[in-house]
Length: 242
Length: 242
Figure 1 (spheres, rainbow over the protein chains, first blue to last red):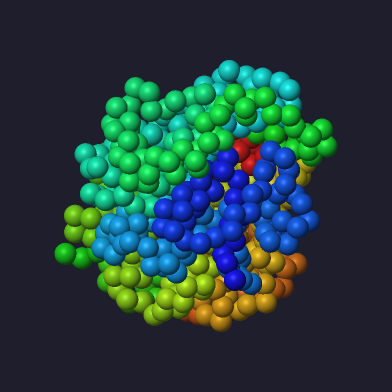
Figure 2 (tube, each protein chain N blue to C red):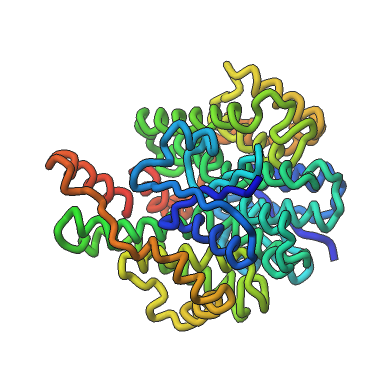
């Protein structure tokens, strides 16, 4: 039975899983779940994942969530090239460290920017106070500085001379604000160079394919949201605004 | 050169690292970093961990932060028994899944609970108003439901019949509110039973030793604040726990 991956390519962790599977020629069936259409709330998806989140991997009877867990599972099951999760204990530790750290920092602020600038206006038909956006951008800035100073430094990739899961996850995160029209690579030549290197390794075509929706900020801003979904999401979105 | 572990046992992830190292006879030098005294904010500590957080590991010139990374590093370097981080693909993924999920879910909730039950009453001179804690209690219940229904189900431990890194991180986290006299597992016999199993597997003496700091009387020095500072702190905490 073929592997199933439940993904919404608007989500950073989903893109990382998608790119990784495709890049390593891992056969899978793509199950598209569009969060902005409320598809994660369907009865059917609930049977797959009671957390109602994406990405989700389904391997026969076995289901798995959390992109870090999924990525590690795929590296092991499909014996992907060792640079993705280096056998050297210290490099591997660095990858683990980055994957854990980014969850509470980059992931949070990169997501916030898209929610504040695009999703909340779409759902609540109101603009978010400028200070909120400013705060989120500042938070992301601080995280990016740490990314450059502690992780990247003068290396070609985050943990050394070769690309790893850390770079893959990082790049999908850094692309997220672009969906809100915010190019965080502007004014950051070091990150620009790193991005270029990562894109080359992943393959430009695959990279653009995975990022098609997030890069189309025009289309995103003009999406029409189902009224019942607006009602359903309102409390959660209002909480984000507090 | 001996391994150094930079810890404050008041912090949940530090306890997990401490218990893991001790339970496995891993030799290390305990480097205390007293959070309450702001020792994590010093420039000196910044050289060990630029993120200025605990726990941190120093192995010769190699430094590592993030408990998820430290625990895996120790498991690999010291070749601890397989059940801690199983070689079985699916069991290992269950551990990875929990380690990833807990980072941004249980940790925050339990820390908020501690604040609500231990710190706010000190500042207010009375328990925090229940309406203010309503959302937090709801969040807690959702997390406990997930712990029971998704991560444990009918297994003895998260990954199966044996304790793993997942159970260790989970158990220390849910001990935090107990430091404020609040048992989150009250009325949840399944979870209370799991907690007992984990304590047994780790060793009751070691478990108690690791939690001594949490239960120690702490001088938060709130009386040294000016009335304005005290009010500001109270408001910040009330906002934090919502």
